[in-house]
Length: 226
Image (cartoon, rainbow, N blue to C red; front, side):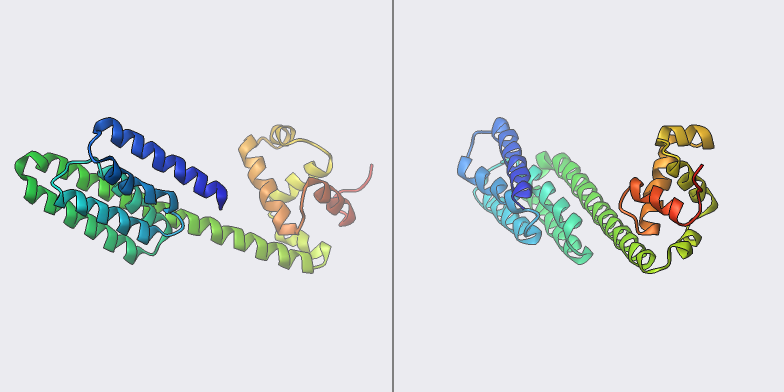
């Protein structure tokens, strides 16, 4: 948690420095626009609301601060860490604000409004993709843990049946003490493919590391001494 806060604090500081470099006007309001980013992953919706409120105050004061950076980071975070309905609500609110700004400031803001709209769309899509990817990684991890538990409760000889023929070949080479590079050369596989096979073999068999894989291969008779 402390590491997450530190990283997000650095992000908030970077956004503030960029905004401050663009204009030195209304520094307290600039701080209010970016400071909530420090807690963006702890409370994405609240952080987006605070930044949107600060941006609205900016509009009421007829200021043109670079609030778009903080808003785009906030809407991305909503998409990456919250359900889709929250992302839709945040994106809709942001787009309403863009339209409001365009109407208030006239033609001079139309081009900027178009770019900001595209940025908001890109941030929303990227956030949603990252959330989906995170869910997939979590599901894969839970599936691997479940397979490892099932494998651990099954007799060792039965676990061999969980392996594909190619994975058995890789296990035999592992038992011979060969490295991934050596296995790749002997089996005519890419080095990355061997790494993938090894990463699948261990959870399937309920093993922690390569040393246990060697012992397993000998205990099940897959490899015989000599």
